[in-house]
Amino acid sequence: MDDDIKNEIRKVALQNAYEHEGKTQDKIVLSKILGTKPEFRSKVKEIIGDISEIVSFVNQLSFDEQKKEIEENFPDILKPKEKIEEREGLPPLQGAEQGKVVTRFPPEPNGYPHIGHAKAAIINSEYAKMYGGKCILRMDDTNPEAERMEYHAAIKVGLDWLGVKFDVVKSTSDDMEFFYEKGMELINSGKAYVCTCKRETISQNRKERKACKCSFRDIKQNNQGWEKMFEKYKPGEAIVRFRGDMKADNAVMRDPVLFRIIDEKHYTLGEKYRVWPSYDLAVAIEDSKDGITHAFRSKEFELRKDLINAILDELGMRKPYQDFFSRLEFKGMPISKRILKPLIEEGKVSWYDDPRLPTLEALRRRGIKAEAIKKFILSLGLTKANTLAPFDALEAFNRKFVDADSIRLFMVSKPKKLKVSNLPFSSIEIPNHPVNDMGKRKIEIDENILICGDDAQNITEGTQVRLLGLGNVEINKVGDELEGNFIEDGKTSNIQKIQWVPQKAAHEIKLLVPNQLFIDEQFNENSLEELEVYTEPHYLKLKEGEEIQFVRFGYCRKDSQNQAIFTHK
Image (tube, rainbow, N blue to C red):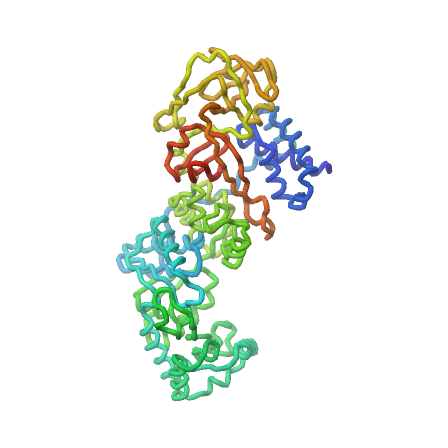
């Protein structure tokens, strides 16, 4: 094997061991190598032997020896990771008056809510609280082709989980008759017209900044066209366009669509309407009608600010203050429905709650706390700079919330049997948390103990190991099974410390370990590991959804009686 690759494997093994009390595992190193060197996916059989050899060697080094080699050969490992700066609250709002601020969160129910939705909802609700004002939840449901009750319900569930509270809950479609009234007002003032050109012609004219022939129709003809949209015209045969400026540098202003025909059944209104307002018209009118003082949206809508103001000016309606913030995504975890939907359809991810995804359902199932998401988002503020955050930035906030309440349990993988003679007791009590008072659990034991296979590799005859919470064992036989004698008052320093579970009561579970979903825009085939592990019987007494710290492994969430999901280190 190439020396550079061996060097990379050694670096990864040392880093992982250094971060996890001096021990690493073949699978973890393999996953990380394939993540950084995807070209080796076809050569797994060739490199797995070298990985095992290097991992075994690294695990035999003392912690101090590992650190010394890192300092000499891989000093970048010890550099502190970039931290997200924590702030207290959001920056002041322009023109805000105490008690008079009204914000809104207007999600479209066309998909499952994700971290980007969380950012918008939290910023709007926090500003309303900050100024003693109101926040409105407005379902932007005026595109029946894409919207479903399933998504509407998922958004409500996600917002409830986040703890975001709203003073008013409504749907944009509640005001359809008002949109029609304002549409006719624009037509009758000459600021809107009915266009029957083909889509290709409209697109070409907009590119060439050329006025459409339909724009020369008089008000009477436009009123006739408007009436035909409700009964005669088919979808795509006619739209209503705003009379903007076809010469404008901002392409949004080149006579954009205000109304279009959609003959799809609406998820709450059925077939009551077929002429639907565009996003630009609906958001402009709704924000003004609902008394919104400060309208926030992600920065891809910034070019639409001029259009929204122009529509409200022509209608003589009040204009809210508009501001914009960057979209929020995690590296390797896209939020686009265009990318996520095919992954589900092709079976590459199980559903929208798959723990590799950035949806709210997936983050909750993975063990990310709503409070951590809120703190993380508020720490980012209102920047317009692209926010493509590493997932460990959110993990850092989450760790503060889960550490204090996570019960500590032992867990072993690739188990090896250790037969311990001379045990002076048949049960022990172990604290559920090393610092906080979370009670104790009783573990029934006999001479048959299971230990982790990776730990067993490093045990030799005649040495002592310390079974955490139990005591020392002097090993007198190694092989497929190990044997040893319990030692009273054994040494505690310079000794291998390992976790264990009683064989007779060990509970087998599947442990899902989510990794980065995309690497260099390519789907990572190794983005979900499934480990078969054994844990203490106390696991069965925990509630579903409870957070656990498996000792020397990391935080995990109980997904079911037979499955847990790795949250993070």
